[in-house]
Image (tube, rainbow, N blue to C red; front, side, top):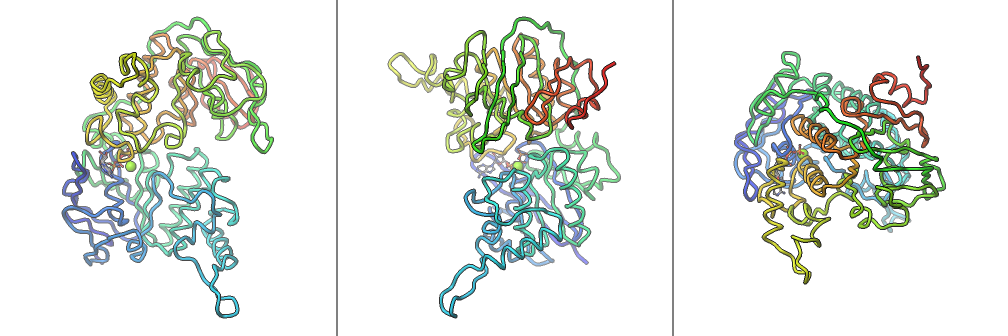
Length: 512
Ligand SMILES: Nc1ncnc2c1ncn2[C@@H]1O[C@H](COP(=O)(O)OP(=O)(O)OP(=O)(O)O)[C@@H](O)[C@H]1O
Ligand SMILES: [Mg+2]
């Protein structure tokens, strides 16, 4: 039997860049094929063509040995191809079932005449599918009320509801916690065992080693390797991806911890539903210190960051930055008081997708000299030269320099742009929430080195991460949250990764 999918000399150009350059690749039925490569290498673009979102400029795609013009996602659906996108595409105000059946709603007729959508039978089918694949959802829940991991299950159910046989996952684990990742990997394996063909885009090489049968490596738009997972190593893969050997892990630069920069006292945050998300939390971050907040997702860590940044209201307590009270202050005043903030959700609060890269890079400074003169006129020369410098320094891969529309950039490069903007603010306090989510191994390494260097320069850093390795590697102090409360605050050198994990589960560890 021939291959199920064949890319034959596929090329895709965007203004200023060849995103896919003469790629030929075969995918076998029933395998898990991982697609690997640096941020901006062209992974999402290649798969978007298989899903009919873009048309190749050159080359052909064959399915079951037959040339197909996949002119839209509808055509892809008819060819039994489904995709879970890097950034989910769900209708926020609709229920899970409504999202799943969107476009192919089952209809019935009242009195044999008046058509209506048969939600009851749709709910039932969704429930059945969710049971069959252990993708637990409550069909009537509204998308905006459910966590990302459930939203992802909805995206998967959406493919299965359409009887997809070829399932494309674009960085599915980037937004998940370690426990959720485990369960998703099991689901993906089960889907393969049921005969589905899986294409998995990911930056996490340990996942690839665990479940992928083969991996294809793309570097700057070209296919540079096609390996059988069993016969290769993480080292070999990463060298092919980045074009050089990557060292993993940093040694902390010498630094001294000095005066208090951020002082949080008795901070509480209550949700709209009157649930206490952050419960009487107090801590300080000093000059030259990385304080990390560890915790299982949803234990209040992100709310602490959002409250300090001014994105959500607080109930009681105080937040002082360099001695100045921030509570009651708007976001701009907080930035000007010396705070940088890299948020968890880059699309909703990190960046404006319809602005170009220059505008996004200077979003928090455009009104200051030298970017604006005293008459309020923008100084484009300054804006251009500064943004070009940031693009170079932070290795932001974009097709048209500082004029690149941010929406067109790859996910990882959007993230690099946010980090560049916030570091360039030169604030005393930098808050990083999941800073390396969606970044390739080279970029993660470079962000870790930057955090280390910022600390050595005397910045105070608050790091919130679900990656325990990242926390262990970078921190001076580790605070663990459980159920909205501080479980412990310890010197990083006094705790092991295992102990931090135990604190995260709410268990008390015997101190020697
Ligand atoms: N619609 C578009 N318009 C213009 N350029 C685009 C568009 N989509 C992608 N590109 C460019 O094509 C290149 C490849 O992007 P792609 O999204 O495929 O990267 P990726 O490998 O998925 O990266 P990441 O790991 O960061 O998600 C990037 O340089 C990107 O800026
Ligand atoms: Mg991508």
